[in-house]
Every structure is written in structure tokens, then in C-alpha cells.
Image (tube, rainbow, N blue to C red; front, side, top):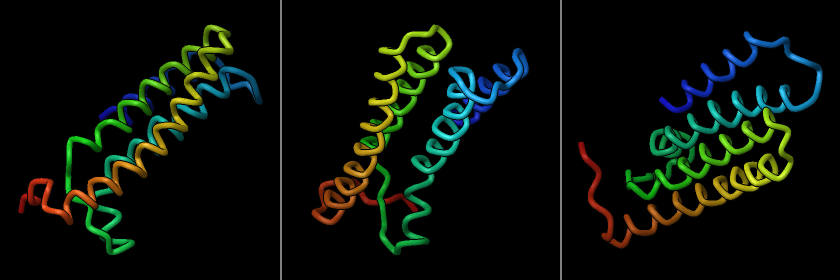
Length: 125
């Protein structure tokens, strides 16, 4: 749902102003779609996609929400920095998005490890 919300935010932003060829508005729109929507969908569907593509089961765990939260908070900071002209806010958001990608990889590996050791609940069927 948060990914779809970023599409709405980006659409409203583009509807209110013309898309420039470069600059802060372009950065906000580009990241709203590709980080807000696309990466949200990758994070949300990893427990389904990874078993189908890589033949690696990923049991659901609340731990998987952590990178998603960091991703959205970082994107919020980045877009706010773009729209307000605050370079430190934009840079902090960019760093948070990079950290979210690392956390995502670590959380998938962690959930996988915990599942093999019997420390996570069994998957629901």
C-alpha cells in the first residue's frame, strides 16, 4: 500500500508542476517511483519471488518490516529535502535508502538462518 501511495504522491507532484529535465523536482519524481514504488514491491514480494526464482525459501517474519520502514522514512526525507532545497536532508534520505537495501539483504539472510535453526515460526499454509 505504501508503494501505491508513493505513486499517488509522485503523480500529484507532477500534475502540479511540469517535469523539468533535471533538478530537485526531477529527483523527487524519479525516486518516488523507483524507490517508493519499485523497491517497495521488491521488498514486499521477496518471500514469494525468491522461492520461485532462486529456489530459496524465505519465511515471513516481522523483521522484514524494518528495511521497509527505513526505506520509506529515508525516501520521505529525500523528497522533503528535494522540495525544500535542503541538501543535508536529501543526503540523509539517500543514505537511509542505501542502508535500507543493506538491511533488506541482512534481514532476508537472517530470517532464512533463523528458519533453518527452528527459531522462527513455521510458515502458514
